[in-house]
Image: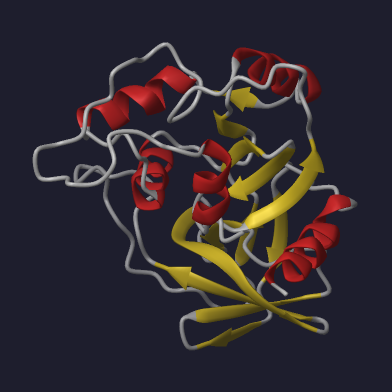
Length: 235
């Protein structure tokens, strides 16, 4: 039964094409911690920012994520949190209102990749020449500093927030999963097989020997790359 549900889940994404360009949608209604937009081509899990329309200079007042699509109504949950983890940046006390803008796919053109080997990296860059992939060594170095040989979802999410990354490109089990870096929802799936079947853990990078902290009694490295990451994204 679980395998059947996984197949149906994959099939629902395989023919979808994600547009990485930022798109603006007018907010038509406000609910508790949610805003409503109409007749969009958005999908669950897509995130962005809400921009106040009350000033001559646009102001980002919240981050937001699509949580539900109900007919013509798209519910977008917002949160007043800073895009950058810096106390020196002033924050706004404005809240969303009718006529404000939900800017979807904010930062989607900047991505991190989690791939098993060098060939997978090269193919990814070739197939997505317009994406700005930050070097995988930055994420691996962060894991080394955190003493986390088995990367946690929240660690990756915080890294993406800190470095202004909008999407994650994950290759596992001969498939490419494109995730929203904020919600960690799968937005698109493509078949992505490579000739090279070698796997480096936690993922391909030049950073070696990521040791676990003395407070961590888990495994010292990922035992099954494909299984680990598929479980992380809920498959």
